Structures are given as structure tokens and as C-alpha cells.
Amino acid sequence: MGYETELKLFIDGAWRSGEGDTAPVINPATGDTIAELPLASTANLDEALAAADRAWPAWRATDVEARGAILRKAAALLRERSEQIGRLLTQEQGKPLAEAIGEVVGAASMFDYFAEQAKRSGGRVLVRPAGQRSIVIPQPVGPTATFTPWNFPIYLLAKKVAAALAAGCTVISKPPEETPGCTGALARALDDAGIPKGVFQLVHGVPDTVSRHLIGSPVIRKISFTGSTGVGKHLMKLAADGMKRITMELGGHAPVLVFDDCDLDKTLDMLVPQKFRNAGQVCVSPTRFFVQEGIYDAFAKGFAERTAGVKIGNGLDADTRMGPLANQRRLPAIAGLVDDAKAKGARVLAGGEPGQGGFFFQPTVLADVPDDAQAMNVEPFGPVALMRSFRSEDEALHNANRLPFGLAAFVFTENGRRANRLGDAIESGMVGVNTFAISVADAPFGGVKESGFGSEGGEEGLASYQVTKAIHQA
Image (cartoon, rainbow, N blue to C red; front, top):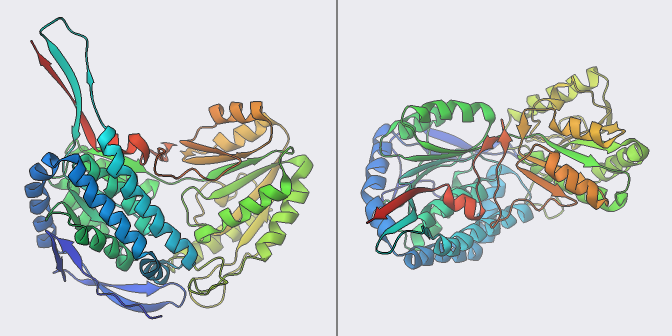
């Protein structure tokens, strides 16, 4: 099936061709250019800012049931169109079609959840003498700018937009230029659901130009960003000049602590598909595998055998289990990490080489990886599993907490006391014990240390788009 979509910007309730330059959209499975994306000019951005500012008073005053009805309709449209949108996503980003469709359905769940959660966002009444009243109420923070990456372009966009719209904020979103068809389809679902003019807008452009222009505007009162730690720090500096509220969901390097009392085969059957999901291009991807020494050899052997059976190919092929990397620049980056680890003593148990055609890299397993290997210190963001053994729980905990990142961590053990201890002691915003189900609509998602701050999802995600006001009456 060919790539069939007309790429446009969505500004002030209208679909625009844009007044800036264009950028190519590339299918990573083939390396072919499949479309040209119109980019927003500064005049387009100013128009979007004016529309968001103009629409904000009426949207914040809109009854929560009316806001929720639009969000629920958008969710229904996303589900109805999930296969069509999933095909766009696969052709733009590379992940297998089943993963892409699942992402669209996950995005729909965000709109449904926040449509209902907004109804529960009440304040409180303080105890005061008779005749006096003091109340504390949440109010929408105001016009918001969101910036999202290409690895989960629909789901991460929905996670921010659904919460912000439910809270009563207007939103200008800049999704990734690599995946404009699928994110544009989300904007079209909101448009078809009846979102008022100016309440939600979608623009593409040169990232630094768009971020500086939107964050520098006095209209924008909140910024939400998902991406690398380096870019997050840059945006924080821009936001500081205007005292903007910010949420930062930044990079990770998830440790996986595997103890000798786990069900080894069951654990391996869970770990390998998760490692190579979306070709490892997942901020919470299990990456640093620390395995208790008594089962280390069996673990490494079982992991490598299962990895060899992961079929790579075009995401539209039914038997593909791992697609290409999303862009060409990731190929030399991953190869460099593998070569560095090998030079420092790591053993290649599977993969280790680029694939054939497109932007493919083989699912790779490296054993006995030392701490001074570059891959153990920077997020690979690719299909590379790094492993080595440990002796004691204290050693495993040290390994988990050694880096400045703290987004997600995972523990596999059948010892309940150990699970409780590690759940408390691991420095991470999220910990999965015998599970990878940590990104769900009703739970907060976010990190600590250089993995950022603030939460998305759950009641905490809604609160991130609200400010607190106390009203006292005597």
C-alpha cells in the first residue's frame, strides 16, 4: 500500500499548506522519500499563538462535560481509523503494523481517560469560623506548547494533548517532522470531533526556530517536552526567561535486575520482545541487564537464542517482529556503540551489524559489558541489549543507580521482600516488578535526576496543566 495523505498544518481551525520551506518524509524501511512536508513560517506561528490566546477564555469556561464529549468522540474516531492511521505510522517510523495500530488505540485511551478524570478534579474547603469561607481550586494554566518525538509520535502527542484539553487549556503542538501523516490524523480526529477553532493547533517546522518562537511568546504559559536530556536542558533555559511552567520527560537507560529465583524461561520470553519493541527506540526500553551470577550463562544463552529468532523487515509485512531504525543517523550511532563495547571486552552473542537496505540494524546482544563502555553510560536508543553478572543485591542496586538517569527500572524476582526493598531503593520514576506495564493512562509517567521531572498520565498528568488558587472570603 502506498503512502496516501495530504500533509498540512492545522492552524485556527483550518488546514493550511504552510508558508515556510518543505522537508522530506522518508520511509525508513526503504530509504525512499514518500512525501514533502510543509513547514510553518514565523507568520504561521504568530497566527497560531493569536488563535490560542483568543480561544483560551471560552475553552476554559466550557463545561467539563462538553469538553469531555469532544475528547471521547476523538477517541472513538481514532479507534475507528486505527488501521489506516497505523499504516501511516509504520511507513513513516518503521515499527511493525501491529505495534503501530496498538499505539493508535493507546492514544485513544488517553482521550477517554482524561475526559473522565477532568470531572474529578475538584478543590477543597478549609475549616473556618461560621460565616467565613476559604476554598482551594485548580484552574487551567493557560495556552500550552507541546513538543514530542518520533518514537511514539501518536501516543506521546495524545498523552500531552488529552490532559491539557481536558484541563481547559488551549494547545499548540509541534510533533516530529519525521511522522507528520499519523500525527496529522490525530489532529483531524480532533477537528472531526468538533474541537473549537484555535483550541488545538498543529504545526511543523525547524525545531529550534519553532521552540524559540513559541516558548518566547508571552501567550504560552506551559511547556511540555518529551525527548533527549540535552534538548530538555536547552528548552528549560528558554522557559526560564518567561517563568514558564514545564514538564520534562527526558532520556533513560533502564536497568533490569534479574535474580536467580526468577522463572528464567518466562522472564526471557518477556524480556526479548520488550527489548526489541520499536527496534529498541523506547525511552523505557530494558537496556542494561544485570543478572545474578548463578543463572548468568543460561540467561545469556537463552537471550541470544531468542534474539536470533526475531525477524526484521518492513513493518507492513505480517511476519516482521522488528522494523528499521527511524532515521539514517541512528545507524552509525549504534554501530559506534557496538564497536566501542567490543574494543573494551564485550562479547557479541547475536547481531552486531547493520541490516540490508533501509535503516536496519540487527537485534544485538552484548555480554560482559564493562562500565567504561560508552553504551553503558549513554542511552543506546536502539536494538542493543547489554548484560553482565552480579553477585549480591547491593551490587545490583549500585549498578541500577550508578547513572544520572532515572526514568524506568525493572526487577525480576519471586522474593516479595526483595521486591519491596528494591522498589523503594532504586532511583527511578517508575519501577516494574515482573512486569513492563508501566505506561498506562491512569498512572503517572515520569523520571527523576537527569531523566526530568513532572508526570504525564493519571491525576498527576492532569494536575500538570493546572494552577492552584486559594480564595478567602470573610
